[in-house]
Image (tube, rainbow, N blue to C red):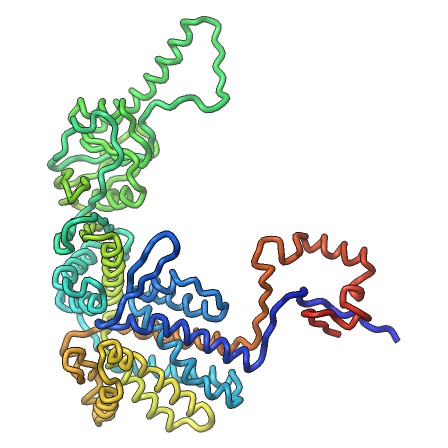
Amino acid sequence: MYQQPGIILLREGTDSSQGKPQLISNINACQAVADTIRTTLGPRGMDKLVFDGKRVTISNDGATIMRLLDIVHPAAKTLVDISMSQDAEVGDGTTSVVLLAGQILKQVKPFVEEGVHPQIIMQGLRTAAVAGVQHLKDIAVNVDLEGSRAMLEVFAGTALNSKLISNQKSLFAPMVVDAISMLDPDVLDLNLVGVKKVPGGSVTQSFLVPGVAFKKTFSYAGFEQMKKVFENPKILLLNVELELKSEKENAEVRITDPSMYQSIVDAEWQIIYEKLDNCVQSGAQIILSKLPIGDLATQYFADRGLFCAGRVEASDLHRVAKATGGKIQSSVNDLTEDVLGLAGHFSEDQVGDERFNIFTGCPEAKTATIVLRGGSEQFIEESHRSIHDALCIVKRGLMGRQVVAGGGAIEMEVSNALRLKARTISGKQQHIVNAFAKALEVVPRQLCENAGFDPTNVLQQLRAQHALPGGEGKWMGVDLDTEGTTDTMVANVWEPAINKINSYTAATEAACVILSIDETVRNPQSEQPGAAAGGMTAQQQHAKMQQRGGYGQLMGKGGKGGKGVRRMK
């Protein structure tokens, strides 16, 4: 009887594991990742020092730590992805989303060990997440943020509570709100909020520029002769090189008369002078270009009382265009009045050891710049990350207009609601919903542990208060000052509802992704380029197999399969 040849699925040396042990292994790996950043949560959280062999990073920002960790476990990398998505979507809550995903997996792990099918668990988790998000939306407080500056400052202050610059939140919270209020309210593009870092001085010397500020660019001789202060200047923005360029390689110019050489040189000078004359005749007092402005052009503009700067970063040039209403030109021909930008005041000021070009009083100002000061590079970098989180939270607060109380209050309230809902569910999913409710308590529990409190006593108080009839204690959260509980809504510990909604949804989906994996196939050799096919293409492999007499001969002795090779019939 003809025997069908086996089909090679995995090459020799491939590591494959499947079934319940594999699922439990993935859950354990995710718990290990969550434990890594567990202590960074909340105002009393600790910092992590990450050294990648080149530079040192000190941070308690969940997304930053997850990005720097070299996680090799393929399933645990899912937690890195949800941390990145939380950072991109909301900007804050990156630590809590990883903690919540890890805790959900920890709570459902006993069900996996007892043989409950993963699909039943996943269905229960999604049911719990939908119910939790709906309850959160029902109790969220709608606020009118139009003109209510104090509420936006509360958002920024809550985001800064757990950061390195929490002691200076009275300085930075108003600064963040001012920066967001200067943007176009229909877009709120955070790329138009520039953050410039100047080492040295105190963090309290940081300031906000209601316009654009950027470091002085590389300059040539003649720069110091330029005028450095202008009132109501016109600004020309270019993407043009204003310097003499040597001929390209292998360029050939044939001449028959030596006098013709001088005419070629004169033509080069005439071209650059025409460009410079066009810039001057446009009426602009300030010329900025993304490309170099050479020494000839610098001296030319200085002699005429103009200011110029070349090699301006593209992001800074874009923000200048947004603020002044100017249009970036790729040619200096036919420059008209409508392409020039306008500013109320321009000056070049000294900030620490750096010199900054500062544009203020721009009529179409829809951009801002925050200049950060600090004693060390690590401190300034962490301050930058903190400011970014606060900017994102204020932006989301403006867009969402629904707030919930922080400090673990909303987690305890949703947990209490899910426990009540679980009583109305029959079957195994009742236990899964209860497990989800239990997992939500990780946030207030970890807040207590990081502050050195006894989490058992505090959680018992919170459970009792959230179980009161009529929702009397729905905003009770952890009081990190007295080792007790407090109404965090009254205490101005607020968070945008979208922050928590995205956190619960992302954590649930990550847990479901991990639970849906029942087999991991890993070939260490294939991690090197070309090694997966032995350095050959698929066509070359196929031809080699045919030369050896077909697939059957590669299956080991008697065609029964060799070590590490799976065989199917």
